Length: 485
Image (cartoon, rainbow, N blue to C red):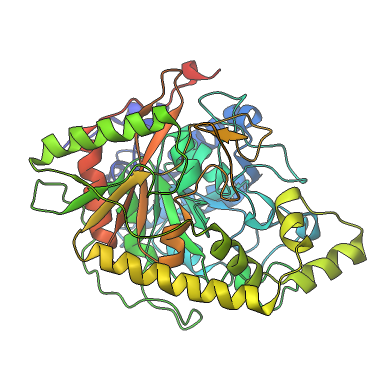
C-alpha cells in the first residue's frame, strides 16, 4: 500500500494520481473535489491548445458536480467509489445536456437529453464529467481527426498521430488531463490509441458494459448501428484504475439485449504470480509487423515469463486475416441510406474512411459470407483458447506514424492492407473476447508500444490481472511535457 499523498501535492499535481488513489484521497477529505476539478480544468486549458484532446469542455457543470460531492462528504453521506474523480467521455457517447457531435457536421449542435448507460453509471458512482474528447467521424477510421475540430496529436511527438478513434480519450489520460476517460471500440478504437499514446486501454467482453443509446439510438437517422461489434471501455494509466471504472459500469440493462449479467462480484485486481497458461504470437501467422515492435513484444514476453516463473509458449491460432469479414460487418451495421440522405440534404461530404465504406456496392452475398467467416473465426479461437488462458500479441503493428496518415504505406516492407496499422485488433471484436493494451516500452526514438492481452470467453477480470502482472514486470516511464517532439 502506498502512503497517502499530502494535500498540497494532490492539489498541485493531480495528474500524478491514479483513479484509485485520487478517489481515496477525496473520500478521506485530504483534498476537496472542487480543488481537484479546478486543477484538472487548469491543466486542460494549458495543454489542450497543443494536443486537442477535448472538443467540448463543461467547466461549469464539472464544478457544480464537484461542489455536490463535497457537500455530501461534509454531511457524512455515502458517496460512490468514484466520488470526485474527473472523467472525460468520448464524443460518440451521449452526455445529457452536453453537446455530442459524433465528430460530424451533421450533428455539430446536437445536445442529448439523456446519458449513455455507462455515463449515467459513472455519474451515479460520483464521477465528475469534465467534457467530451475528440474522435474520428462517427468512429470510422483509427485516427483522431474530423472536419469539426482541430486534429488530436500524439503527446509524445506532435508530428505523429495518436491513433483512434478514441484519440482524445487516450491523449487526455496520457497527458494527465484526466485519470480516466471513456472510449468505444468497434475494431480496436480503445486499444489502438492506448498503444500509440502509452496508456492502458481495456475493451471488455461484448455486452459487459451496456451500450445505449449511443450509436444505437433509432431516433437518429444518421449514426445508428455498430451493434454487432461495438464495446465501451475505460482508458486509464493502470489496470487497477480500469478495474475500478469497470466495477461501476457493468451489469445488465434492458435497453441493451446483449448486456451481460453481473457475474463478477469483486473487481479487485490481484497481480500475484499464479499458474496460468499464456501463449504469444507476434503476427498471428498473417500480419505484417514492424521489426522493432516485434522485438519489444518478444522482450516483454521473456521478462514476463521470468517474472511469473513459467514458460510463455509461441503459438498461432488457425485463422486467416479477418479484415474482409470485418469491413462487411461494419457496412452491414451502418445506416448507409440514412447517412447518404442526410449528407445530400445538407450538402455535407464525408471523410475518406466513411466515404470508402459508403461508396462500395455491398451485396447480400458479401454479408452472408462475412457472417459465416465470423462464425468460423470464433470457433477456431475458442478451440485455440482451450489450451491457453491468455494470448499476447502486439496491439498495433507499428509505433505512431505521421499525423496526416491513416496508416503508414508500408509495414515491414509490405503494403499496408485494409486493416491499416492494427491488423490484430478486430479479432477481439469479432469474437467478443476481452482484450487490453498494456504499455510495455518505447522504440529507440521514443514512441510508445503496447502489448495486447486477449483473454478467454468473458474472463475480463483475468485480463486485468495479467495486465497488472505485466505492469509489475515491466514498469514504464509515464509521459511528461519534456518528451514532446
